[in-house]
Image 1 (cartoon, rainbow, N blue to C red):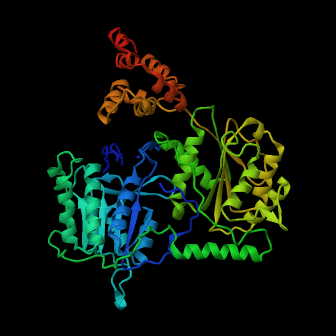
Image 2 (image 1 turned 60 degrees about the vertical axis):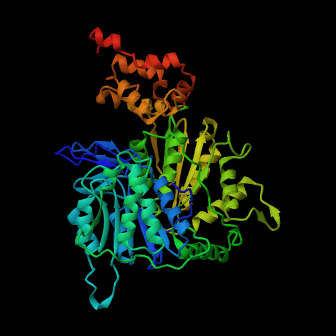
Length: 566
């Protein structure tokens, strides 16, 4: 479990927790029905925070997928009729969950001694004080008129230094709160506790019994160092409260399934949308399969791009055409893939309901233009029919008109993001492609486009101004981190940390990229051996480096330091 700490002058995170569901059909969760046997899980993974000088500082991405899978596995094995919903930890989503009658709440995010760390809805960090948390959750919970709306009975604050936040929930009227002492908590301990705690709670054990079961699971876990000490970090508040209470009283089910983000009303909304479009006389295929569009996954070792993702995300939220440019190998496709995954999991805060990822012709759909591949995706996912009058639609002009016809009828809660990945120079100079974009922006209101290319698309006017972001190479620290993840000569986490600390001795140098004038000779030498910060070159260097050359990395700059070089 991660921690963020102050520098006593500003809210300055310096410690972090150690780094997604690819579904693109998304609707606001305000439409969800909350049942008594339900758990709302709020995850907080902001990309950046701003220091006292207004500069963006990256926050290492958290690995929520493991925690998500553990929670789902618990309820899957328990096989009880309990509804589990995952959402983003913003003040709006928290208050909405409470208002809708959320009975049990799980929060997971960075820990802090004085604050709970939420997201601001745009990828930034939102600090929530304990008093703000108490007021936010406690508002309207007086139960006037005999109603129980807004009454949260149980909260699990899965974060370091979370006791003060736990006490704030108690102050807001929550009867049972699991949290951590004002101390660091190991990820392995948090996961071991979570697994057995929720298993016991799901099958109908009391909070008290489930808490003790979770603690003993930590104590007995072979993957938790100093397990007895870690076990004692978990606390149940209020300490003098009666926790001999069940949270869930659910019937067994044959096959438990995690609910999709929008629940039943989401499915009705989609069906209703199809029906209305079909009645509108367009070519929408109301009988389509409607299977969920799966986004490509980011590379397994994707790291170090939090600030860049934040910049691109806010450009996408505020503009209709965003182009990420850079030389081959800098990681344009990787960062956009990671960004779309990040966006899709924040459907309730970004307002983007659908994502279509149209990939490179070099890898997919050879012989098809980008517009034809977009048409093909719309057909595959049940939005339109590939036939008209019993005949296959083959002319690109007809395909474009059908695409525009569908997107013209989008409503404000059905915003679409189209990603055209890896557009080559020939395509960016293609008049027909630019004409399609011009028509798209001129004739629709709720469609955004994100492009990766070697250079800008060059669209002038046409209903959208092009925002161009030039993706830089990785910093020294992130270059070494990526190399350490990839190099076959590095075997353990301790080995990786040793390599990073040995090569990145100066924090200021660690933040620089290869083109910065402030880099010293030692930094320049390391960059030259590790691909100058370009991810594909780092990959090549990692797998091609001999054992002897690897050992030589630790000697880089020794002679320079002895000789007094800078």
